[in-house]
Image 1 (tube, helix red, strand yellow):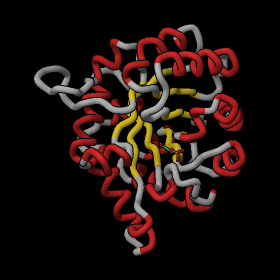
Image 2: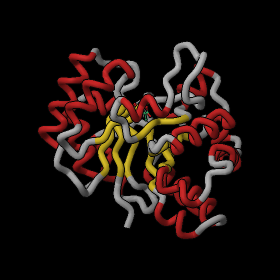
Image 3: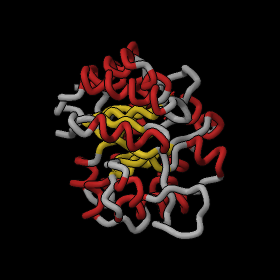
Image 4: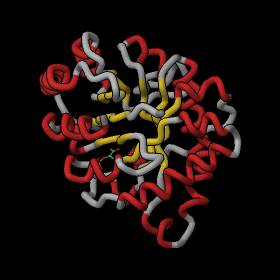
Length: 250
Ligand code: PEP
C-alpha cells in the first residue's frame, strides 16, 4: 500500500506573514494527519518561519527548487543542503514553470535530483507533456524520455527519496484538469516504465498528479489506480480548499 502525498506549491505568493498565517491554519486543521504525507512549499524567504510552525505537526515543508551544486559562486541560487538547514524534507524539481521560464533541461533536472537526494531531501520530480505533444501522439515518448534522463544514475537505494509528479503542462494553472482516465493512463505508463527496471520500486514509488486539482475534482482523480495524491498549485493557497483536498486523499 502506497501512502498518498499531497504537496501544496505556493509558487511566488505570500509574504512571510501570509505564509505564517496559512501554515498556522493548516497545522491546526490537518497537522495531526498521518495516513497522508502533507507537504507545503513556500517561497524561500518564508521557509524558516513555516518550518518552525510545522515542526510540531505532521506537515512537512519543501523548497520549490534547488541548485545542483551545494555551495559556491552561484549568485541567487539555493542549494539542497541549505534547504535541509532551513528545515525542509522535500524539494520540487523540474516544475514546468522552471523548465519553461528558466530553461531547465532534463539533464539539469537530473543533476538537481542527485543533489537533493544526496542532501537527504525527498525529490518531487515533475514531468509532463504540452498539449501539442499530447495531440501529436508523442506524449508517452516525451514522458518516458523525461523520466529516463531525470532519473539517470539514480540507484535503487535512492528511490525511497523520490516522488514523481505527473503534471500535464496544459492543465497547470489553467483550470483544465486531465480527466481521471487521462491521469490514470499516464500514471500507469510511468509505473510500467519503472517496472522494466525494478518491479518493487515501481510498486512502492509515489506518483502524484498535478494540474488544476480542486476540492470538486480531487475524489475522482484520487480514485484512480496508480494516482497517489497530488501536487496542488492554486488551490493550495486557500486553506479550506487545501484541507478538503488533503482529506480527500486520506
Ligand atoms: C502546480 O503548480 O504544480 C500546479 C499543479 O498548479 P495548479 O494546481 O494551479 O494547476
